[in-house]
Length: 117
Image (cartoon, rainbow, N blue to C red; front, side, top):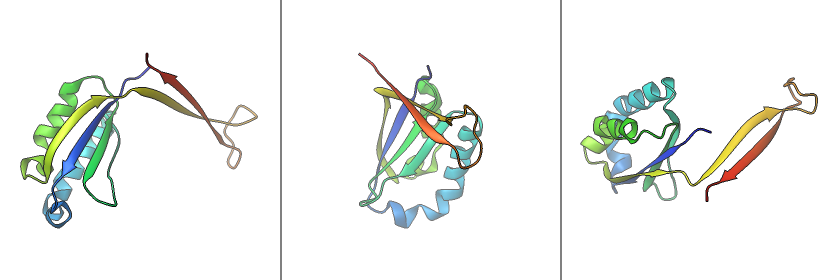
């Protein structure tokens, strides 16, 4: 089973005002990590915009730490602190249908969760 790491960014109060000139570089790093199969999901939380989460498809902390070291949001102080934490619960989502194939309009989600002890 695959292991995931959660990178959580604490964002500064002026994050929204300051991110525009850094956004292309930040998204370029994120897209490259995604294309390598390392970054599974990422985004800022809203109401309020005070944190962002990035879910990594790896158990290698150095992959995540390298991203943080290169991220302009961190370098330029938009991120005031960050943490890396392993996931505590695993969920696998698989597409399936009652016929065993995936014809359009006949798909459903099958979710399997495994808890660590």
